[in-house]
Structure formats: structure tokens, C-alpha cells
Length: 398
Image (cartoon, rainbow, N blue to C red; front, side):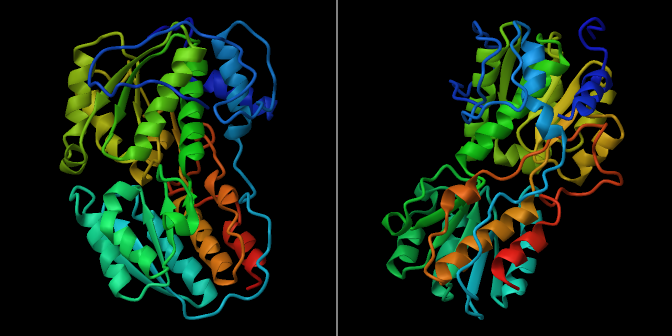
């Protein structure tokens, strides 16, 4: 490890907490080969075009990256949606939630159950296998045939949903996307909102790459592990590669693409170890979702790499949160999955009253970076902004 530039996470994060205070790219999706490019260090804007909280002018990529992530080391307190409902939504609406059977999606279900109950609505959960190309569309068709008033689905796209989405449109059943690349066009394409869509994924990817830039002193060598079968994760890949390319001239990114079958079959950790053993310069492993890090700290230790390589990633499950607490990972950007379900139900409630669903307000969810310094203990799934349920209920008048 480079002790001169990486005195450890505590020094950087500690100074950030005391201060209290994302990005197109071109990832060709190959499974090997590092990328570097000249940078424009000290850029004044983030991936989403918003100025960082503390505008720091510096030629040091680590300093400017540190400034960009300062505010995200504090837990968010607002849901980002402020307009109250125009009235009380009708009771008894039938909501269908299409639940992909992977760990990163399952926590969303609890949010749907609680949010639907708060409005007196009826929820049906249909579980499908994301590895089955026909799974999402078959579940959506079942929801249409079941008489759904609203349908929600995560991580899928219009081309995959196909004729099932057409069937929903024909029956005027609004579909609420979550973590998708789809455009929101309402009746024109059947998609009425995209909770945590492209801008959110771009920002999350840029934030975590900024963390690596700051933590490494501006010379991180990253193995980027992704599942491009999920289109929204390719958005993350583009943001990560773009941010490293533009902001860190001495950083390298080596992509490792795996399949959904690899992820569900438990082979990703061994693939990561093999990639690290073939490239001794890599000192960070970046996983796009926590499922990809299942068993990874143990696999790294068994290979003698536990003290050399730092783990960072998005969407941690409880296992990955515990790895932060134990000091076996450096950073994760948790996803408020239950709160995102409440945001989806909020869209439905607005539609039920003939309101504009304010799709943009539901797209860019609150973000936070967890490290061993600020992660909650004991380990828990991140729910969302503080008191998010009460904030939604206040908007709903319930």
C-alpha cells in the first residue's frame, strides 16, 4: 500500500466530518484493459451540473474530489418532495409490485407494504427471476390480467417489458419505473415516473469515484465490477469511468463484467480474486451493487489480498454494511430502498387525484456515503432520509 498518499480512510474522512461541511463516459464494457485520460482537475461542477457545497480551486484531484463529497458524508434529512397532495386519495387501489428475486431488490418490498397500508391500498407482490429474460414481462402481464390500478417494477426497461407494457398502456394502467434508464412520457409510453433513474445513478457513481480519488491521493487503480445486463448499472459504469477520466489523470479503471447468473451463482468473488492476481497494481475493488461483494472480504483474505485492496461499492446489503463496521470495506453509497417505494406510491397517489406526479422530484433521491467512520452500528439496511415515512404521510394528510 502507498503509505505516503493513503494514510488510511480515517484521516480523510475525519477531516471531512470536521469540515461538515457526477458524468458521461465511454465504457466499452470489455472485461479487461485499464483506461486513463488527461483530466480537467478542479472542475466546478458535478456530474449532474450542480456546484459542490465547497468550491475548492486546486490542481490536486484529491483535494477537489474531497470537496465534492463533503456534504454526502452527512445523513440526508429531507425526502426531496415538497408538494402536498390536493386531497385524500381514494382507498382500495390495487398496486402490483414486480419483485426481482435478488437481494438488492428485496428490501424495496417492505417499503411498498408500509406505504400501501398507509393509504389503505391493496398490494400484490409478484416475484420473478431476473435471470429469466421473460420473467419481468410475464410478471407484468399477470399484474395487468389481475386488474392492477398501478404497477411498479425495478431495474427493467421498455424493451424488456415489451408487449406486457403495451397491455398495461391499453388498459390505462400507469407503470412506475424504479432504477431504470427509461424516459418518462406518461401515456405516450406507459411510464409515469422513474424513481432513482438515470440522474440518480450518475450522481451515485460519480460520488463513489470521487471518494476513491480523495482516499487514494489521486492515484487509485480500480477494478470496476459490474453487471451490464442491468441497463441502469451501465449508466453507473459510464459515470464512474467518465469521472475518473476527467478528474484523475493518474487513476486507472479496469472493468470486470459479470452476468446475473455469475452473481446469483456465487462465482463473482473468485473472478475478482483472479483479476487481482493478474494485475498487482489494483488497489481498489468497486462493485456496482452489494450482491457482487458477497463473500468478497473473506475471499480477499484467503488470497492474501485483504490488506492490499480496498472495497467500495453501491447498494450495500446488510452483509456489506457489516463489512464497513468491521473495517473490511472502505465506503458504500447505500440506497434508501424502502423510501424509494414510498416515492413510487407517492406518484401513484398523485395520479389517483389527477395531479401532475412531479416525475423529476421523484427521480433524484437523497444520497449519502457510508464509511467505517459514519456507518450505523449495529448493521442495518439504509431506509432513506430521516423520518421519511412521517414526511410522506404529512404530504398525504394521513
